[in-house]
Image 1 (spheres, rainbow, N blue to C red):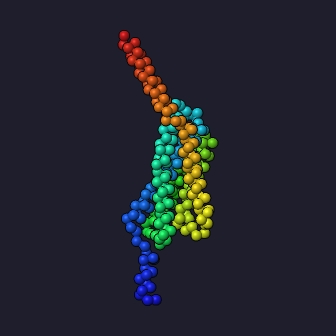
Image 2 (image 1 turned 90 degrees about the vertical axis):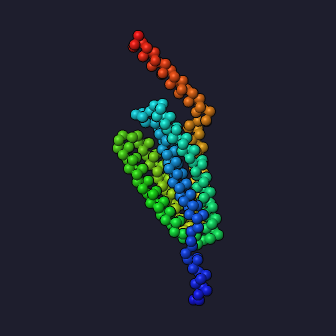
Image 3 (image 1 turned 90 degrees about the horizontal axis):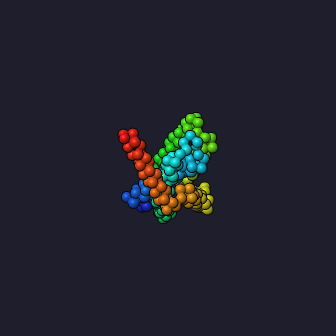
Length: 229
């Protein structure tokens, strides 16, 4: 092999990461983490609302669930499209420059993603089993376990094939999987609006809470006056 051949093949075997590549990969992974956590929290709160526990029922407890759902919806509306855009843009780069699939930062982040997801899943399962042993309702326990495994399966399946390459998977199957994840996320976010209500109804509820607080304050002042006089 001539020196000319070596000089031509060397860049293909060791592609260098540009600043744009580093930031895009970091953006994609961070957006994935945030989206997965927000989606899982939202599913957990759906379970808490739809399968209430008599031991933890109450107005303020329910409002806490609604608040977590609203925060999760807000996070997914902003962060998940960023993740989808970053993944789409990176795939366009890979199609133009296939050697960039072998970037060190990409392999490190993908492996770390699988590792971090495994730790999160282990921690969630330990927490759920602890709650179950503490007397948590069985239906709530099973539903939350299924939610954890759904998110875990989606992340592991996608990034396992990202690490191993999609050569053995048809392009149609890959697109179907991606569209199913997007559709499921969109449906879960849309369902959240039916649970927590519209912004107008939430504002009316806050007015009611303020009235209740004012009445309780008046009651306290009357009792205090009566005790002293």
